[in-house]
Image 1 (cartoon, rainbow, N blue to C red):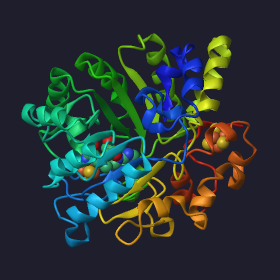
Image 2: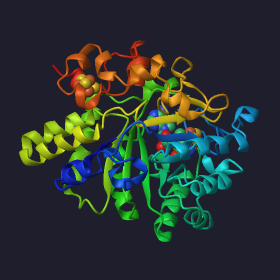
Image 3: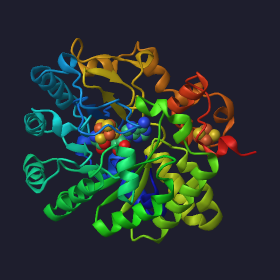
Image 4: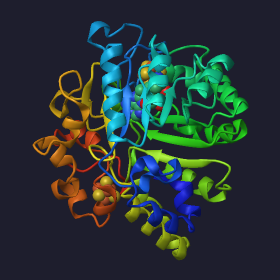
Length: 395
Ligand SMILES: C[S@@+](CC[C@H](N)C(=O)[O-])C[C@H]1O[C@@H](n2cnc3c(N)ncnc32)[C@H](O)[C@@H]1O
Ligand code: SF4
Ligand code: SF4
């Protein structure tokens, strides 16, 4: 993830980052997690494939039909949590589907907390009533990300395929802010909603959330079917980056953090802008990016486990050919620490394997070549250049 606000305003952060660099992630405050020792990944766990919405872009292909008996049982889920606790992973992110649809969600969240794990929730907001938010506080989930894919009912409801879902997301965020639960907006940018991004930033500010997280659409799951119609062209990507840069620069960094996910090349964009406009900040941003290794984290700082217990390098990489193992038959720790996995080994040496424009790009050490899944789906080659990157398309 590329933390626009932190990199633009974070001159003082370099010394903090150095302080946390070699400490185990569980001992590092959330704000500095990106600087901590690697190999204990942040785990995105899709605890269910069940969902009360059916968004057209969903990477998990989630919806009202249960994945049934293939989903991890409560006992299997507990063993998996034991394993993560023993590994001392930095954060367990409950996601889905809609995590709150899994009947034993509260038992799982409680158990993870009891085992000493930091936990967070990724939700579509539909079920986040005041009472549910109170429960979230009680079980100690540290952060709630709520999807908001438009600044208007029309756009959000269109992307989320359900009337009324916009107002529910807004209410969910208000409920979290009112209850003092740290929360943020998550927006997935595609053709349908890119024009509303400036208003989504305004709306997020007016709600008082701590974070605005921009996801670039990845051709994964249902998102793959309509990708050619929904994907942004290079100029649209640049227009959005310009908006994010300007707004992050204007913003008081304590008010709201702006960041992007699944496009580490945004760090290259940011460095180029800063180099032209503010050399001192450019130097500190470069140092921070080098320290954090905020490149593609898949297979290193990030792992994904799907509802059936299959392990992948990241949540967008849920493809049979990238499956690393299954926690029903092996422990997560064994899967993750295996020295013999060709997929993990390749993901842990991304820069060496890059091809095309990414191979010769001077930023490749910092960005690791963007998103491998976008490259793979569009070209059939996992190591091809990421077509979303503005530098791939420039002269
Ligand atoms: C899979 S959802 C699960 C949590 C919850 N149901 C929700 O929608 O927030 C997590 C996040 O991934 C985003 N997402 C889903 N499919 C995506 C795709 N193909 N590309 C990029 N982001 C995607 C969603 O918009 C959402 O913000
Ligand atoms: S993106 Fe979230 S809300 Fe939408 S279908 Fe997927 S899991 Fe459900
Ligand atoms: S061309 Fe490739 S390596 Fe260079 S910034 Fe873009 S995605 Fe990263």
